[in-house]
Amino acid sequence: MTKYHKKPIVVDAELFEMGMEDGYASYPVFSDKLIGFYPKGGPIPKANNKPAIKTLEGWYEVEVGKHYIVTGVRGERYPVEKDIFEETYEKVID
Image (cartoon, rainbow, N blue to C red):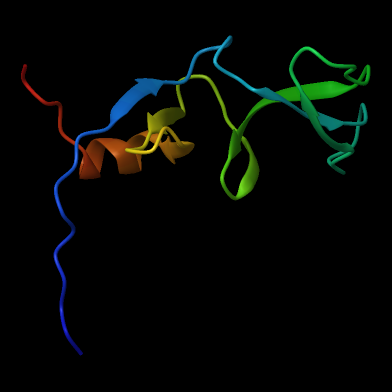
């Protein structure tokens, strides 16, 4: 098997805070069964709504202080759990 090393790239990332979400994952009250994902600014069910972001692969639930939101080289956004992010990324000194 041939081994490869990932090319170093610089990405923008921020620890998730409310207001950065693209929409919400909705759950019925007293249930963990997902109703669906609803974009911010549109009609959202009156239910337990958890923040979510839209990625290239679909919707992903995020939590304040638990996920970094990374913006890739082509503007795509994706969440990375805080502990994994801090193990695999280091801050670039300008």
